Length: 94
Image 1 (spheres, rainbow, N blue to C red):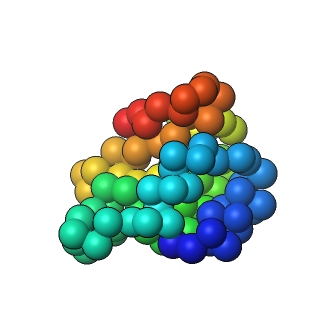
Image 2 (cartoon, rainbow, N blue to C red):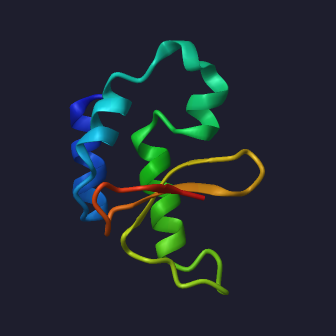
């Protein structure tokens, strides 16, 4: 991702992402490979925006998705990895 990509995530989702996350995704380690960027910690701004939006809009009717949880990846088995931006430092939760 670029700095502009992270800015776009923040603008679209109405959040401020932690500087550690910004630094990580802008300098995304190439040696993590395709699986990591497609699942574990996404390296695509659209994936972050779309997943967070889907959950906020009620994709899972049994859960009210908290606004402060930003989806940043998944396990590949249906579990999401999220930043809890209500805390500082922002933990990654599953």
